[in-house]
Length: 555
Image: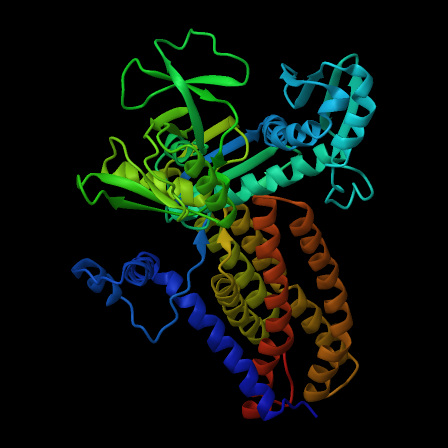
């Protein structure tokens, strides 16, 4: 007999109601969006302004407030393709390694004589010794500083490649460590860019690694590509250097391992600094905008982790009365004199800050310094008007597809076609409900996936209805024909949709950007289409059949 258990019917109805309830906020997009923004603002600040309270009251709290996020091509925004200069990290690694190498070679002074660091290509550390006959022992001592490469491809390899040439010891990163460093640099760059964009409060940005050294950055709702570059393009690298002296211009030639940097606050003043910093912003754990208690001027406070606090405390304790420079992105922010040991691991950066600039600097420092410089290869700004046109075009395509499919089903299958058409409408609602629930981003290719799903959604119903027709021709009764139609069409429905779903999964795993947007909506559409065809349409037909009890059915 053609039956659906009561618990099964209740479960189907509950799934439909849940999907529609999660999809419904998208019909009042701007209203719900203002409500969500106000809720986020109140949660972040703890203060409820009149505007926030009004926006919060614009949508009932007991209703779902999840929305489908609109992608860059629908909302407008900025697109950047950046290239990370991963080779810059090699030079920084060598600078950081020099103190350890120097200490290791000092223990061999009787063997190698005096040691001196000499100029070397970027990413190399060259040390000249006065007694070349001691180089084999020096090579062994420096190799002892190496560690195993931390990567799957570099198992068993060492981080350093140490060799000797003439009277010079040459240290460089091994090839395996370079590959591992490149990978870590890219991961760190992607994460820091994501943090900086998130700090700015943007919605659903797309930040993905592309290839070996490139990052794709797409941020909906931002004004221009330049605004996005200003947000993420600054390395915000904070370092603390010993001050050697002052220079009249940047053209003076400093001694080896010294640099000349300009002062931000003092026009025409340049500082000569030791190139190797005492401590860097990598050891920062927090940074906040604040006000100086004496002058009332905006400042930026910072706090080091235990490692940075120890280095900072040891240096300031040993150099009381000496100046040191706070350097941000190769500019001296300030060069105060150390009046006492700073052992607390915290301090403040003062300068000609405004409230906005101090807040921006604190955000950049808190997000972390980019490990290497980024070069922008491609930039594009998409205006909101273009996004609105894309939405309108997608809406027209969906409506045309809807009307065509509904007309075909009703003309071909009569009342059963009406049931399939209602199920199709519910299917689209379920798609948007799932997209809202998982916080997916809808792009123009995603709309194409939904339109394609509309066309494919009735395939399962066509298989079932055609099978019912065949059973009716074999002189089966209406109830038996419907039951056999669903049973014998099920395997074909599963096979056809499973193969398409596998393709959607492959597109999601291997694709990026627009391809992923298409695969997400296509995959979700396949799942909801199978559900509505096997369960929802069948529920309609069985409910109608129980009430009408027809002796004959026309499919």
